[in-house]
Length: 119
Image (cartoon, rainbow, N blue to C red; front, side):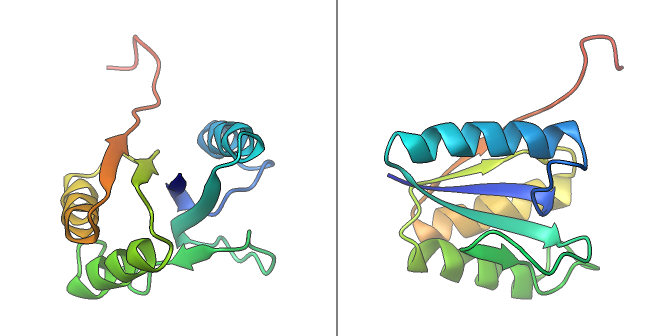
């Protein structure tokens, strides 16, 4: 199965918990024979991104048509069945991800990382 992971920032094990969780889950899936690719809004100045990574073209307007089309085309090109988003905090982002996955024929899984008493 072809699976894409969406994080706000490119996966960096020195950065934060969400990226570490994404990396661990993606690594486990790769070891089981799944093809993984990655989507992020900001590469955080990195020059060495994982292979098969899309950086959205318009980070200042996350729900832009430009981002939706780029994501849709990336998902189609990699024949992605599932997009796992570890950035389920923004409604505008969630809407854009839903539209792009629907158009690409993929499923969207939103993951909320928080602590039980954070709100």
